[in-house]
Image (cartoon, helix red, strand yellow):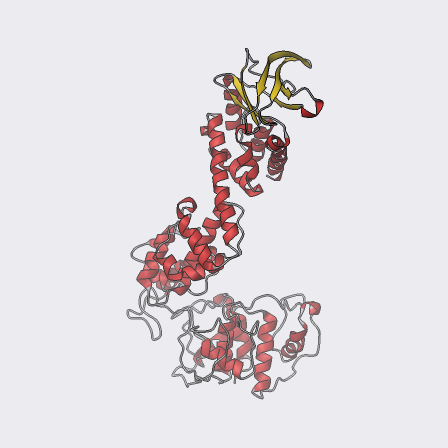
Length: 554
């Protein structure tokens, strides 16, 4: 692939030399295969007589005079001449070129250009060979090796004006429809089409660094060329969408279209709430062709509302993450309905049938209430996590953790910073309903009060002064730091049960986290990931988090 696009670059460089020729005094030409003629234009002095000559190749470096005449240039400084070719050779050798020259009699005014003429039979044969190319690399190489045959010179200027990606896209478009390309005109039409798209890209790049309103005006003005629909979803979130598009430079028109739909869909889905099942179903259906890899099964009319109960709006960052969440929702729904056949109305805290919106714990003032059944275990997915199952059940019965649904704990899923802080806020009984914190990403977040409580207690800080990173996965070292702070702030003692031994990857542990990690290790709360390595920057899953917190809960 790289080789193919190197060919494009080289060809574009050669083309640029030819198309710039007009301004520099080198004639440019256009060949008419049907009429067996050539039209030549040169930029010269206005209203002046010039001698023009055309020499026909005979082979072996020999030439014969094909045409000679005296022509006067126009008042705009252009000299135009049309020449009918006399019985041209339809299949010239690679080194057989027509040579055109013009001069006003002085050596400084001489101009020259060379071209090859191919008859329709030769062109058809080349097109046939081109259509049979099986790789983009071979296609590109053959196309540019025969640039005279395919008359790229008819459209040199728009091709040269394209960005490198524009050139690539043009060749890719030609390669995709190669079997239907039956004429040089078709080739040139694709180049012209992509040149027009490039103008739209240039316009976008000119406005994308301004205000969001400029992007909005651009999208409305160019919606047809971009193939985008400015619907109600856009109108409801257009400032947010346009602000995300600001400063996103595009190389080709698809960059703009893809960026528009990605931001539109992500913004729309993240605004949906658990009570909007019908809206979610309609929105998913509307955009399913834009979101890669959503299984067709998700749109099963009898099950879609059940699947939606396991989605996580508010957490999406890419279209792929939406698609992946849809796949996970199908699996969780099916797993739940297969194993949970004893209840017709659902258990407390969830909804019946396909499962309610139980992917996040509801916000309530947490307490360590006594439970009726001391060792109640409702979870059916802990078989592969025996090392943590008792701790998970322990925290469940203390109401420190809850499941993703009535009987699904989902132990392998990574823990977000918000989820981890919530567990600690309950475990250490520091929940404060009146707490507040000035982090932009926790306003109206389900864990807002838990995070604010921990922040007020001096247990957590943000990733920046204004951003907590509530939906970011928590790293193993940060989990240690937060738990260590919580224990010190609440006066809990860490008993040293292990001898002091550094991890093999101690140099990977951040300075701010080192003391906390080592204290947790000596207390037996954490262990390595194998080979005495801690893996400080890897994420922590729900089972790991539960085991850590259970170790300090009485």
